[in-house]
Amino acid sequence: MSEPWLPQVIDPDAAIFTVSVAANLTGMHPQTLRGYDRMGLVVPKRAKGRGRRYSPRDVTRLRLIQRLSQEEVINLNGIRRIIGLEKELDDMRQRVSEITDLMRQMTDMQQQVQRIFTAGPTGVQPGRHRREYLRALESGPTDL
Image (cartoon, rainbow, N blue to C red; front, top):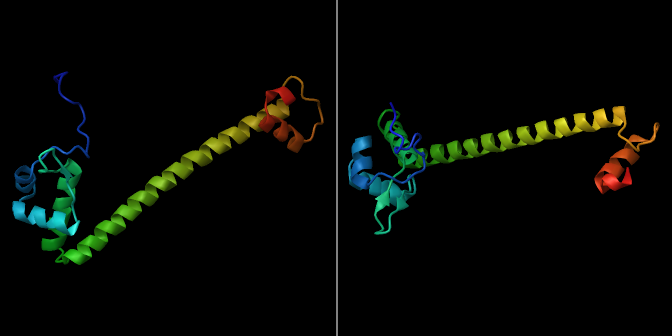
């Protein structure tokens, strides 16, 4: 049974881990995490006292850096490039998703206009040219 006062989902960007906890979760030394922060590989948010606070997403990225560095033997400049390209790819995926949604909305609107044009709303004369009808739609319902 879940406790109602506990959050059901943890925000992956919530800055909740201190340096020592994030280091423990990743198996790294806290100084290594500070170095990655200075290099810009993982930039945690700052608490009011200027202490670093890492999010679950930051911890995941630190684990990725560790794996790439140790298992794949990639230097930090290569890791920086990989992370940058992954960020670009994520941004592009988000943009494609937004464009796909927009196209779906436009297709739905086009189908609605086609149904209205075919059925003919009240006040639209039969045989009226489609372009004139669409122009009338743009200018508002009073022109129909």
